Amino acid sequence: MPLAREVAVEVAKQHGVCIRPVPLKRLDMHTGKWEIVDVPCGATLEATCPPCAKRNRQLRMAQCREGWHLEAEPIITPDEPNEAQRWLIEFRADIQAQRDQADQAGADTTDLDAVITGLDEEINDTGMRGNVLGRAVPKRNRSTRRRQDAPDLPKRRMTGTTLGRTFASSDGKTYRPSLFATLTLPSYGKIRNGVPVDPDTYDYARAARDALHFSKLVDRFVQNLRRVAGYDVQYFAAVEPQKRLAPHLHMAIRGTLPRAEIKQIAAATYHQVWWPPADDVVFDGEHLPVWEDGIGYLDPTTGEVLPTWDQALDQLDTDQAAEPLHVSRFGVQVDVQGVLAGTPDADQCIRYLSKYLTKSISDSLDPDDQAQKDHAARMTEALRFEPCAPTCPNWLRYGVQPKNAKPGMTPGRCRSKAHKPDHLGYAGRRVLVSRKWSNKTLAEHKQDRRTWVLQALGQSDQPPDPHRYVWKPVPAGDANVAPLAVRLLRSVAERQRWRAHMALLQAQADGQDLSAIPDAA
Ligand SMILES: [Zn+2]
Ligand SMILES: [Zn+2]
Image (tube, rainbow, N blue to C red; front, side, top):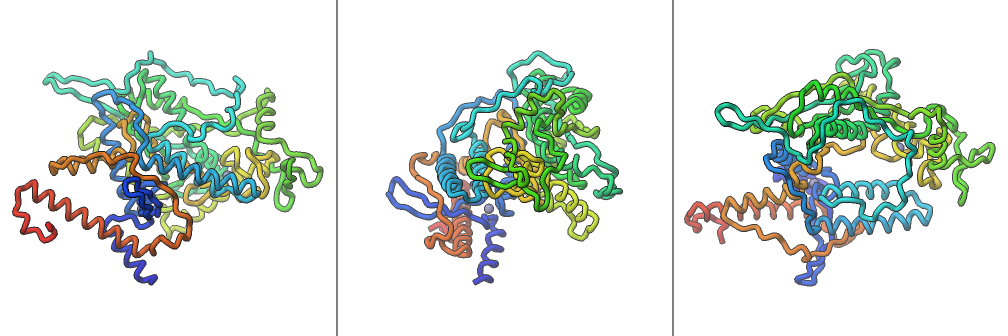
């Protein structure tokens, strides 16, 4: 059986079929029957299998190409939720219920919390806005002092457009220039062949914090960019690891600005992290805070209750001498390239943008390069006790109760992605697409491709009845789920049938004699 499974996986890969399908229960409202269907991993959570990752990469390229040099203002209309969205929301509710149950029973909810975060991202990604459950807790009012100042930059009057300027040449042609920018983080010490020349002086602590807060820095850059540009600048960006293992950003920007201004914006952009101090270790080794039901975490020696997350933030607000935990900025290396719509340059940038999308940070490590492996290990170590979020158990090390503190939290044992060697601090999304880029979600691009093929063959693609199916997750170990090998081969057969069907339609469109095609019957 294991052999059969391996063979099935290989066959599935060759046919571009998902090798980690997610089984789901589906009620067909037309027939009243429940059945178990496989959904490709790439369609639900983050694509984890190579065929899905490859397909998603192609879709991302299509999305990037379509939005970059848009000629007309995108129109945003909220659509009826589709099947996938409905399923996601039901699944989200289900997991939330499981999580609340686990929480009440005092069990560890880390895994379920991670799933919920992933689902929320996924739900937003399918084009639905906002949080499904609404915000449970009102957002803290920040004191004015902790609000970030706008850096000193030129500011144009804001116009509502998302389109860049166009230029007409003397022969009447219209040019749509855009930008391709690459932003990196600062130096943490001299690097040779991707590894620090002197690991002892390389600033791993700073590198770790910069990686953890990189997505916030990118947000600030976009805010500043829009303020300077004076229009609603749209972008498609990819976050990728550099060889030195720091994240950097490639960004396709619709429209154009002087290159010097982009550099000026990057230089002026910063992000302040207003978190409690985390530089002095208060609890370490065996000397760790202890949990007391109904009270929270206490100092094991004095019995004193540790400040809660909110109390620690209040303390920050009132302390006039307080400094932000961290301030991140970009490095001096900023590359800006002008790109014209429809040129080979534009195509090359799009390929470049999506080049690393199927790889994790650790994939770019050379397994035979011991120096690089050591560098990655030191980076992982630097991240081990660094708080990754307000909820991170590492706060206990610095004498603060994490947000939503619960029993069983241990510093150095945070299970968030940010601490893992696969992510090295950056746990955010790899692709960042602004809302009015192509005006389509990845799912809509997927549907486009299908519609395009069918239209090319003279077939209409009726939208499926959105109320036809009701979806439910399948509990792990459900006996009705067939062995993986069987399911994979089933998918391969389906893919082959679809291809044969398309070939048949093609032949019909070409006016061929159908009896010559073996599968025509
Ligand atoms: Zn897959
Ligand atoms: Zn953490």
